[in-house]
Length: 393
Image (cartoon, rainbow, N blue to C red; front, top):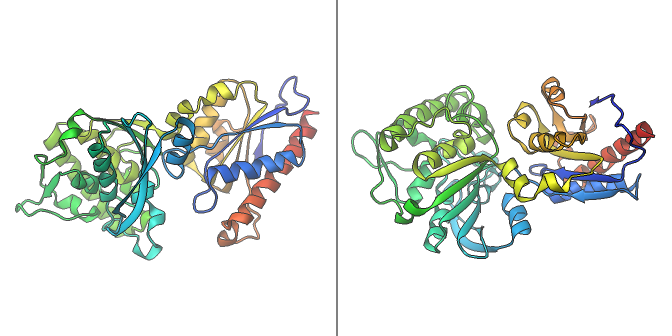
């Protein structure tokens, strides 16, 4: 736990608090976490104005939050999940029918498959490509795609296959799907790619800024949470290194060291190489859309949060982006979270306070029960509000 020692000058009580909690993955949505925090403040300072901002960095909730703010419709369809099983899913389309809004996690996300099926050697981003194809067929030529929360590490090969690209090994045999094919790819046939891709543009909301491959790349950093063991991680990273060369031979684009190319198991790199894409931190993209900096003006405090806090939080995740925006207006930011590691790095980033909501007596399974998590957020924020009110007075 860390709390700064500087008393905000001229403050006597909290009048305006901004709540911008990311989802607590597998537990609470951003909206639910904000509501619990607002309840904690109201129990101590009922006169305080709480402004709630649902937020996401490209993963869970990205589509819902974006459509709530700017409007549009949901398009429902069948597509393949990471295990190539048909599921019912959806994406968004703008009111003028020109822009598609896609959340990769809704079709290629980790929560869509059971833990025993999680294997990034096998899982594929094919379904994400199916959603893009459907939107292209409906006339969309602008795309905003959030790629957080994926279950895949296939360098976007599955997505490209759904769009008509074909992958062959050195003997000329067409390859199937999954991370296992990356090291075998010797040639990419682009002749049957969807023709509308040539006139389309993709804005990709990344939740991380990792390079394509290597020690900080997609496989080494994220494959384990997608079901990979040590041997799989080595195989996947070797495959990423190999297919990056084929990407370069095919398109002339070198993507290995570009920040964000390793996002979502390397699909960021595929977008860069083949689909006329721009990669942006999803947190910044959404905060700009929500006009966050404008709406926090005059706030006494910002409270943000997430389920797990570690050094990756500082890699353009929502709390880091919120801290940057608020710091420009000298508004203190408190971060609450389910679990904390890398505390020293987080303290150095400039948060006014970093607090875990989880009592030590709770098991992870208990702590992740939605009603328990709501209660813990409420109680933590309530205690912080009491402390701040005493401190400022």
